[in-house]
Length: 524
Image (cartoon, rainbow, N blue to C red):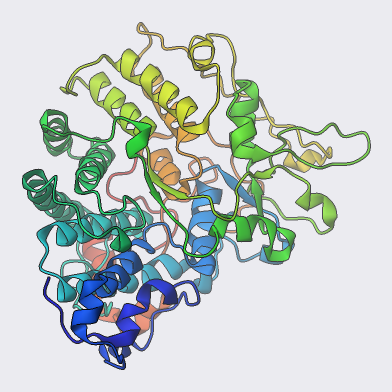
């Protein structure tokens, strides 16, 4: 391993992110104030550990404040998993399509620089091809989420210091580069799949190279399916490469990708401690799971805590409402999450559903029919969560999602629109569109609480059928029927990177820079 002079601040990066969500003082990260010799640091893998675990902290952000903005307030709301329960958010939140810049800037201004700086740190301290391939996989996973939020982003021309004042790549160009980087990492790890690295440097797989290879293939499959409506030939090529790979993607829950929290699981802090809980479980997912009598509810949710005549159960809160004041808003169902729970990146159930969709499209997914892969996705999810009754559930041909009735009889929150009628049991004679809805709906349930991923799939397919917002503060920019399609670029880009962001909007996005404009791969 090659070591360079990066010092105590660089070694402490993996700890520092839990206190800070903004990127500043980038030059300080390369200042040597350590009293330890490089040999001592190398012996215990402290330098690589600091750099690589620091990078891992920015896929699903482990910093609580960043996690709240990205995973709960943005992804949770738009993905149908969570609903805001702090009435101080009224008038400025994502859920009602009018986020203030301080909210909308976070995935762009905080995540991108942190990812690039920490990725560069890994390359500066190590020549181990396995560790470098892992760093490339982590960067690809993190950046894929950011481009799915905004569309075109600066990527190929960002400097090692993470500065954002760079030209933008189109989203198609970003995806092409992600595939190129994943293919390189996959080739490297295929040759070195038994060459593990320091467990101290890996909060996900403990340095297991083979498991990282499976994750890289799985991420490649996810991205291939994402572009299937706009670049079918490329999507099929990438997906079939995964299917024919000698190791392939994740197929077992033992290989699921989870990251360990450094201190406490950020969802626990957000859902229970911030103002007695700034978010609650969304009525979207409880309406589906209640209608299906889904046994996983007991593992996903804490029941609501209403008093008086209101019966308790898994009552979610309608998202996109004018949030009322008072204690009752905190009584809706909450996420079941402990302080030391690991945080999901990707699971075997999702991979099975991805392969099921590929099979529906007529792609070679390496064996199994769309039906068998769909059923396997359900079984894997039940196994992951320790729930019983998977076979009974997947053979249920009658249950449908419930329409939502607010448990406190706040009639403005009720949903009386078109009923969601999709059932669970696979129907081989169904139309391709119904098969797709069935796959995406069950993948959505199995992927809880990956809100950014859920929002992306909703925009790509229109599924699951989420309830429109009650309050739309977009001034007509966002159609409530199709929901928010992306985030607008931060205001800072127009003052600090004006020429490049203007070029991106006019030539790459080719539409107004607002939340109603589709990203490249989205359903038109």
